[in-house]
Amino acid sequence: MDDWYVDDRCTNCDVARQLAPGLIEEVGGRSEIVRQPRDAADLAQLNAAAFACHTRSIRRPAGPLDSAADPFPLALDDTVLICGHNSPHTAAANSYLLRRPSGTLMMVDTPRWAGELAARYEALGRVTDVLLTHRDHVAHGRRYADRFGARLWIHEGDLAAAPDADRVLRGTEPTEIADGVIAFPLRGHTEGSVLFVADQRYCFSGDSIYWSRTRNALAVAEHVTWYSIEELAASLARTAPLLHFEWVLPGHGDRKQLAPEEMAEQLRALTAHTRQLRPRPVDFAAHQW
Image 1 (cartoon, rainbow, N blue to C red):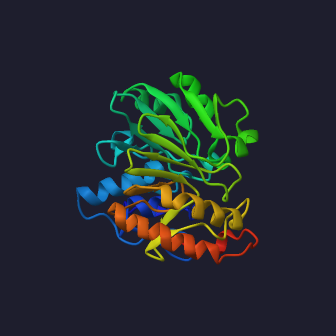
Image 2: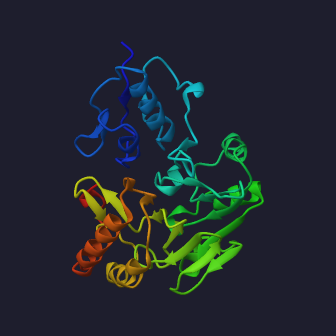
């Protein structure tokens, strides 16, 4: 028997469930294989989940993963790629590559560090910038930026976590950091959290907002807010009316594409919901994906 399984190192980070829906689900506060692959498409999804898993918990008894089946970087569309190979040093955060019209790329947050991974990303084009959404995701940022000869960005509110950043965002006003790429400071999850919006289509949201499958709606991580839920509510009230995008692409939580007007309505509802929240202790077990 060569069935796939999830070992006991699983941290319930949700990454595998995003990549292999219907094959991997949450059972008892962790991921479990609920159906074995039936065809090549199922197998590809399981391999994507396995190569993204930060604890390498998705396994087969027969032996190690087949490197030839590693799909990353995995194209979401013709502009955004998912880096995969999530890092245990960023709590398994998703990271992305953003193609620019010039043929260059930007990296948003970082996968685990490995020279062979860096070479794989470099093969797609010159990476000019590494954009850090907040302090929890700074691991490997300097190393990737140095490898690529890229600029490392962070907001001043989280500068202590990356004091050697090359570019520091300041204040609360939106800043255009490249053609078509705007940084929107969104203090709340951390003091220096930032949304990066590209081409009025893609919102790289870090841990500020994500798509919740439980609520079938945009959500904030109200149970895992390190700085201030009240500041997050104020940030959303200030910033949401300025935002225009189709894709929410978070570090943690699911991705989602909606028509811009639907996404705007989701943001309005989320702003109203967050305004009602009050501070509470961090409780990972209470978080709902």
